[in-house]
Length: 199
Image (cartoon, helix red, strand yellow):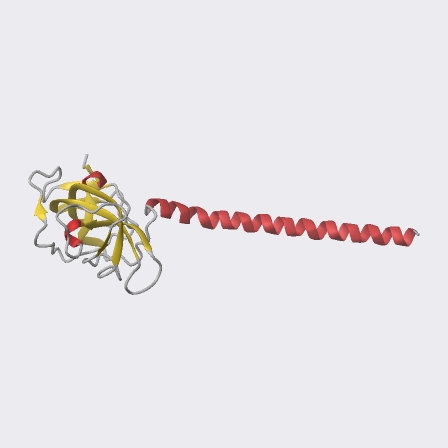
């Protein structure tokens, strides 16, 4: 009888030991996951929910022929401003030189790249003049249009759904990434709301 009680006691202790070890491992795994997710979540917040891994940071400086230069932009060509947007890592907080200022309608768009891969959602920005056969009146959320711009891999020729539309001044800018020191030239586009004066 005593042996039976001793065996039951040992088995109980062994089970308690195994269960507590499993619980600690699960807790550690959860903690590791939390640690891994936090930087990712903050990066996603900074990038405003967009995946810009395929973004062409620098551009040619060419703009559509029918794009209208802004008559009286808040930030004149040649002036400096601070970028408040984070379309890409190292963009926010960079000092930009204004290369061009244009009055247009800007859109956030969602589309599936022509090169395949996952759908891009809420991409900022595509302007009215970068749509194929643009209409004279601005499009509205839910409308579809073919993109005639290559800010990102697989964008040119993709059919986009308009997520939002806003009439504003957009800027083409030069700046240096705060993360790597890489120079970005003729970046398209930054809106007036995404800039602030240099103090």
